[in-house]
Amino acid sequence: MKKLFLLVALMSTMSLSAQTWKNVSNPFQATAMDGTTVKLQDWLDSGYYVVLDFFAVWCGPCWQMHTSGHLDRVYETLGPNGENTVRVAMVEVDNSSNDAAVRGNGGNTLGDWTSGGTIEYPIINSMSPLNCVSGFFQNAIPYLVFVTPDGRYCDFDDLRAVTASRAVDVVRRYMSLASGQVGIADADAATLRVSPNPVSDRLQVTAEGFRGMSVYDMSGRKVLYTDRPQADVSALPQGVYLLRIETEENVRSGKVMKSVKFVKR
Image (cartoon, rainbow, N blue to C red; front, side):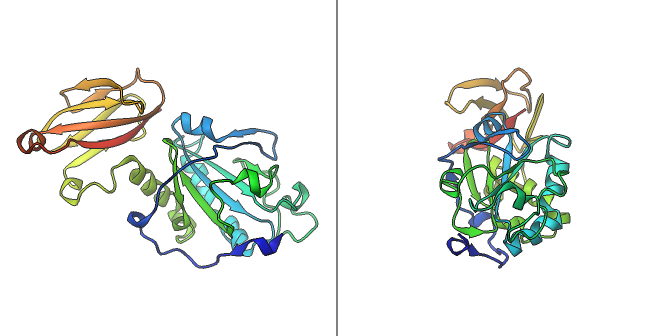
């Protein structure tokens, strides 16, 4: 089985702006080693960003990253006991590796990937590579994926390219990229800000020449409008929304209104 996988040890130098976003085609459901059920679609529907780490128990670069604590930092800060904006899961892609190998016993495992059962995020070892990672896995490990609540994903090698102490910053950067706050035209970047994102009650918009903002759900239905730079979104169901911001420049020039995606928690 090892021959099917290419070990990728080089750190990625790709910039965030060069990332290619794809649509999730297989929002899988699986049982983790601790018995919990992982439903990717449920996480996305609840407005969470997701980091998936595809590994094999014999993969040296996978083990190096695992023991460096990148995912631990992300989960502790952004997971359920932190800011509660991100979910994390590991997926063992070699279907010849049993649960004992993941726990560090027998075979050619490099160690206990569960850290004695203390890792709180799910580790999945119940599905074969052909069905668990369809639409994600690229036959190269380590392979990390960043998934957005609106069902897009991209390669996440940038997480491996930094030290564990910067892992949370990289995830936050991708969250901003996915929500539309990164990638706004340079002329707008200094004058447009939407915060907090994700949001639970009040959304604040800072935009030069602000005139009003409209909130749309992902079906395109307008669910809120205000001519004030602060919107009460507490009554909206959890999910992903599109915020369209009208400014004096839009009215004067006839340009399309600026749009930003945000997550309601």
